Amino acid sequence: MALWGRRAFSALRVWGPGGGRKCISNSVSASGSFGSRGSSEKKFSLQDVAELIRTRACQRVVVMVGAGISTPSGIPDFRSPGSGLYSNLLQYNLPYPEAIFELEFFFHNPKPFFTLAKQLYPGNYRPNIIHYFFRLLDDKGLLLRLYTQNIDGLERVSGIPVSKLVEAHGTFASATCTVCRRSFPEKDLWADVMMDKVPCCPVCTGIVKPDIVFFGEPLPERFLLHVLDFPMADLLLILGTSLENQGLNSGPCACQVEPFASLSEAVRGSVPRLLINRDLVGPFAWHPRSRDVVQLGDVVHNVERLVELLGWTEELQDLVQRETGKLDGRDI
Ligand code: CNA
Image (cartoon, rainbow, N blue to C red; front, side):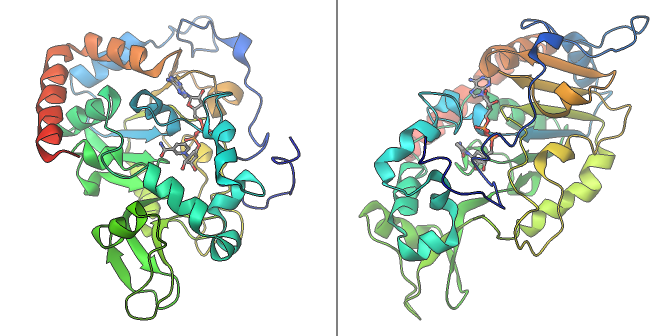
């Protein structure tokens, strides 16, 4: 325990010990949906959400996702006891888990971060049905933007155009020299990373760091798109995230940004919000709205239910098969 509780953090980018609000888990039945606070008001349901998408009554869908959508791909989240990276970090011999995303520690010892990078190398993991559901939403012209906290790049691999993505905590797809600030594409790094070598700038020999957001670093400029996206959204889907404030606007950040949890409050009051997650989290617990729908439980199971209600099951299966075939062909 001492390992986790060693320091007080101004920037809780990833692990935020107990920073989240308590779940009011008894306010919602584990299997069902909830939302309406007034007893006379009809509860909004998963069927209602499906109908809005199916009939194209909603065409500007904003999606927010976190580590929970990649656990079906085999990448542990950080918090789930036993399986979470929380529990698996001991192998990195870190003084405390947050150190892996701290610049000070990185300059002292960049190896643990690059070990994690090697683990997340494109090809080690593949998109799952959830990523492909978002791809299908986009193929149908219904996805306004997907905001991801994940750094595994699986949204890109699934074929969602980069223009539709906001990778809020950065990406391994590009890298920057920590000294001369030259940019590098990821392909320039991977040979070193795969051989457990720390990549260095060919010009100034500084360490080249993938563009993953570390504590206190500004978020990618694209994150500012939320200022337009959220007020424009006509449906908000939130999946696989604890919606905890991960210190996105704390520390010496150059940009003033809303933390992820608050983003879910930035859609208009009339906009339906669907949470699919194992736990009741964020504003769904402490500030529910009348058109909120909560589906607690396994994220794959609940997405499959939604897809079935949409009548897209076959189409999604075809897409998964086609894209999986392409990945097999590319051997990544
Ligand atoms: P988190 O705080 O670990 O929360 C994940 C949430 O997903 C929790 O509420 C879990 O209960 C839930 N969950 C996990 N698996 C399932 C499942 N199968 N079905 C339903 N719900 C599930 O992760 P957040 O994304 O909210 O926190 C943000 C951090 C985690 C960011 O800084 C990420 O960079 C970081 N992270 C990313 C990855 C990745 O890129 N795949 C992995 C681990 C952590």
